[in-house]
Amino acid sequence: SLPASASPLLRDMAHVAYLAGEALVGFAKDRSALTLQEKTAGDFVSSADLKSEAIIADWLKTRYPDFGWVGEETGAQITGFDEPYWVVDPLDGTSNFLKGLPHWAVSIALCKGDAPIAAIVYDPVKEELFSAERGCGAFLNGARIWVNSDISLSTAILATGVPAGGRVTYLSDCLMDLEQLMPKSAGIRRWGAAALDLAYVAAGRLDAYWERNLGPWDIAAGWLLVQEAGGCVEPLWSGEPILKSGSFLAGDAALLRQVHPYLTPKH
Ligand code: IPD
Ligand code: CA
Ligand code: CA
Ligand code: CA
Image (cartoon, rainbow, N blue to C red; front, side, top):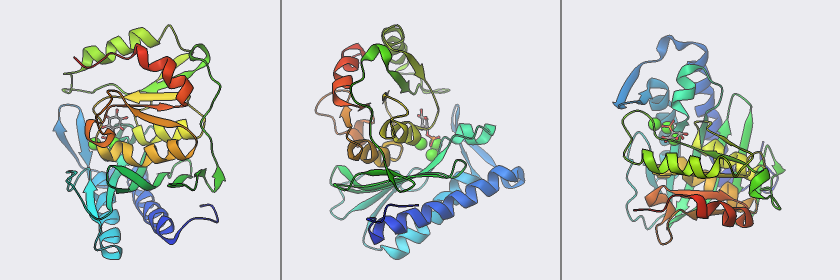
């Protein structure tokens, strides 16, 4: 559910996330309709991803014909939109989904300029709906959530993501990040669904999260959740817009000042 303050627009976003989530749960329960393609080595798209994106795109484009569209599987191009534009990951955590690991989500953001203004991340398995609108706070099933503050690096649980399959061009940077931060923190997780990593930072379940080279659909909604929960999402390298570079660090500002120096700089 949503907070009482939710706008009609956020309610529409949640509605379509529920519809997509229902379809995805259908595929997860009856795998006979699941077909698979490998986009690049280790990077899969299934009939479930495509169906979910079709449901979201049809509904939002009909209801909001003037808004732009960026979806992972259709129209994956951020181009200077003047109007607000949707940034949608129809199934974040495809590999988890395909293995039956119950950790995946639908991510829907509305963006304006370079940044999100409304966000939904929905985990249908756990029935958790994360929501935010710019300036109005972040919520989990209608209850306010907050990023953990007053955490030192030595007691922090961090999360990250590492490239899969053929996407190894920045592998050494990821390995150096881990080598630096594993001994300094209280532990590092790799959950496999970026939108939920950000939502969990917003909800105080993770203290900080970083990842490199993600798509805008992985980040847009979760970014607003973290900000509206009192946290900070900063580019790994200053001056690079987060949705374009896909490389960022999220959490409480004071903790990020402790984490950032250990992350391998761009070279
Ligand atoms: C992936 C997940 C994963 C991240 C990958 C993303 P997808 O999204 O968010 O955690 O490490 O790089 O591509 O493909 O399952 O939507
Ligand atoms: Ca994908
Ligand atoms: Ca994703
Ligand atoms: Ca996806």
